[in-house]
Amino acid sequence: MSKVALITGAGRGIGAATARELGRRGFHVVVNYRGDAVSAEKVAEDIRREGGTAELAQADVRDPEQVAALVRGRDTVDALVCNANIPPPFAPLDAMTWEDFIGKVDGEMAAVFHLTQRVTRVMRGQGSGRIVYVSSLSAELTRPGAIAHATAKAALDTFARHVAAEAGPYGIGVNVVAPGAVRTDATAHMTTPEKKARAERSVLHRMLEPEDVAKVVAAIVGGDFQAATGVRIPVDGGFRVLAAP
Image (cartoon, rainbow, N blue to C red; front, side, top):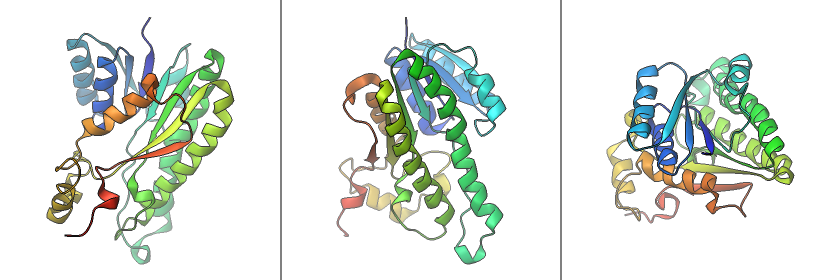
């Protein structure tokens, strides 16, 4: 019987690449999406074409009732990848409203809180499971206008550590993957020539692709990191340690 992986925001970008990668590794993939059914169906079709199995699961994972419906009836969830993108406002503090700021933080945390609560109950019952939260290097860096995004991701990282502490005794591993700049539709408008040039000086000599992050996530949920929990893994091609030109 195939292991079951539930991936939020799996219709595009890192989520889609992770869904395909886990499909190749024998997981039955639950492709969650909020609004773009066409993209999600394409991901599911790609998985099936390569011999895997997948199903679509529409839900806004910020909504506790939709999350309850998403998880209801699932006796097994072996892997949960929380990847849903909550678009942030980009503005300096002086120009940002409280509503925009807290809206990003609230959305980020709602998208993991309700689902983690429901899924860990299933995982505790089966005595095992792997959870990966997709965060960002933004949680530890500063850049103009990113105060809401960085604060939300820092909150996510802290949340993950506490989930790891509570879930560990039940055989559930919990880790964070923190990508640097990745070439996706969601980040295309932020990819400046300077950022691209710096990324090309990395150990990869190019910008990160969604598949680079997906392989790290797949290694974690696939069992290669069984002895690691509560760990934050930067996936940045060496961005943080690159010397200035």
